Length: 234
Image 1: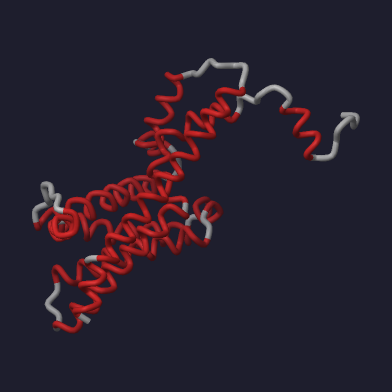
Image 2: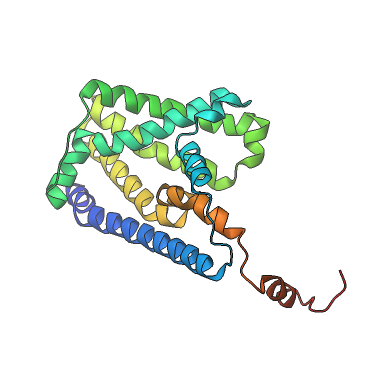
C-alpha cells in the first residue's frame, strides 16, 4: 500500500497534472485559432466589446441568477464552486504535495477554514445532486454526466475529510488516502475531455458566441451545398 501511495503521490500525480494542463492548452489554442480564423473571414469587423465584457462578467460571477426562480439552487451552486476551487488549491496538505513535486508553495488555509469549507462543499454537492433529481427544471437540463461528475467530485472531498478529521486505523487511512489521490488524479485527466474544460474557455465564450453570428461571405452557398439544396426554391 505504501508503494502505491508513493507512486500516486509522485509520478502519477505529475503525469495526470501534465495531461490536464496540455489538454486544456490544446482546447484553448483550438478555440482561439478558430475565433481568429472566423474574424479574418468575416466582412463585419465590429465587435461589441462592452457587451462581451458585461456578459463574460455575468457568466463568471452569476449573481443575477439569484433573481430567477432557482434562487436557493443558484446560491448552493455558487457556494459549491467556491469550495471546489479554494479547498484543493489552498489546503496545506495539497500545497506540501506541490512543494515535494515541483518545489513551489503558497499560503494555505487554516485548519478551521479548511474544515468548514470542506464540510460545506460536501453538503452543497449532495444538495445539488438531490436538486437535480427533484427540481423539474434542473432535472430536464441535467444529463447523466452531470450526476456522475457530482459523485466523482464528492469522492476526494469525502475521503480527504475522513483522513484529516476522523480517527481510523492505519490500513483504513491508507485506503482512503489512496482513493483520495486516485480520484483527484482521475478528475485531472477527465477535465479536458468534459464540460469542466469551460474553466479555461469562460473568458472567450462570449467572444466566440459573437463571432459565430458573423457569417463569412458565401456561407449561404456552402450551407445549401452541404444540405444538397443548391438551386432549390425556398
